[in-house]
Length: 374
Image (tube, rainbow, N blue to C red):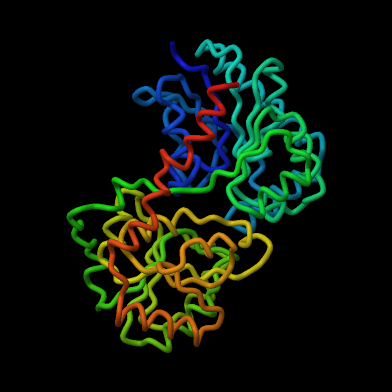
């Protein structure tokens, strides 16, 4: 018997950075029809309505977190106008209802990866509601009071809530989540724990060894000044940073030392090659309320690739991975820790052992089973 249909409301586009939403949707799509609903973005290509056995729908949103400051300012102005917000929400509801009618989706499970589109649950009054709390959403929005009300209403009505970290679970408990799981992030093991290392991309091969790599977004939570100082202290080390850069940071990265290279975003399929060509991996995040709630996917990808990780102590989640993650709070301590792991790296097999229990299919199994039971 086929599993119940499911609509996954993702906070990020399918063809953007490959993160928890894509992996979760992949697992949930087995044996069921799944509609992946994502926000329209200006910096990414929207998927076709159908590709293979997958269905997608891109909905218009007010891009209050847009990378471009002008667009973000216009969206914020529009978001402050209730009539405009209601018009956008009505448009979202019409597009979703039309698509569900065409697909024959009647009472699907509704899984929200962000509260922003949770008003759409009104279209399906008899459907089970699941909320996957993967980020401290109140730290990303300009008007947290309004988002707090939306979040509280979603949690109060949800049949199942999952949190990806200790801090996020505490938030959900404070909001009165009735049924709460805590299943964090994981790694696509077969992709990253490769037996034969792929050749490094030409951009990476041109950089001197040793190399200490970072993969992922460079935004306000990334400690640029710390990494600048670490690169200055270790002039013989190459520091490739692979991922999208917020436009607001462009001027600052012009001051980067010569051995620190901002590569830009590369396809997810290429990330294992970037890791295979490095000798260490980095997570230089600032420590604040937002990052304290993070369970980074990149952390498990680094370890599965056999790379030691040097990170700032930004999250309690890092404490579970002693022996593979080396914490340093200052630039001096960070550079010293990086030098130690480059000179005497831990055995890659031991690092992979730390990541092995975090395979996506294992980490998400309790969540998938709980959804099946709804």
